[in-house]
Image (cartoon, rainbow, N blue to C red; front, side, top):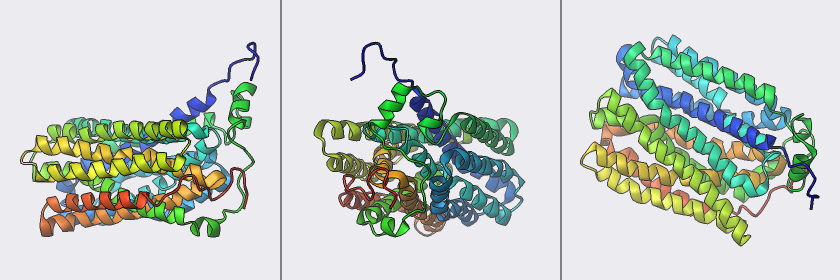
Length: 426
């Protein structure tokens, strides 16, 4: 125990967390700009619903394919340099969306945008692994993902306002600039380990060291050991289901409101934001509840499983009345409950790579998120064709079934069974 006269620990780790929250916000702001501008873009460029599916799917495909390379780069060269570089990359391609002149050029730009965003969450997870205490992991992952959903929630009204006043192109310029500013702040402030940061005093360093064993940059990534882990494959399969569900709401809900319920642009921006606000609350609650349960019970495996399973089952139950709703207000209300349930699982899911991955948590998270975004790619690409064949209810019915499957899969995940001991190289 420190003497009473000892200085209090500095709070650099908290600043690091909140700058990371801002990065998560920007990732989703830049994605949601597209989904909310899509009706206007389709009208100007004369794009079909099938074209829109391919454009949305191009981002998801680039995002999915480059998860593991992105996670590897973060583990190998450190989050400070790599995260600043990839945020700059995708911010440039956010702005470059305005240069597209037809479906093919738009597909190419959105694919390259997805390539840039791919490393964001794995590298951000890695960036927190040496700063966040183990007892705060669920909260940290919950609050970062809540930030992403908050960013997504505030974006639809802003995009609607910009489009109504200035057209759809300025929206992409504005959000691209925000990302470039963040990248500069990150590179200036963040350091890959607490020892490298001049603002960390000895008391904070001792606090972090008492919980997290640190070493230098990771060496070669032991992929064979990661990919042999049943935990990793259960995690990936579960996140595939999650990614499918999220993509339907994130990429298609504004178009669904416009085409199925015939709401105008201003009302669409408001309605599309509400489920994401509910999702923000779910992110906060899920991560906090899991950490609180783990602290009180000492049973990390049960604390992670129970919260996530509840979230998926709650979402599946809410999707049914949302699909059967007879007016847009009822649909939005139950969609809010559905997205809330889906997002309760997120902080828990992203805490698991930290629980089991040690210094290679970025690579473990990359495997998980690759699977999740392959689910997102398949879902978002299929929606346009599914709607054409079966109507707008079909994508949401499939999402409800995916939530049920995800609940089953999470029962196979053991957050207490680490692949590596913290600080272990091989």
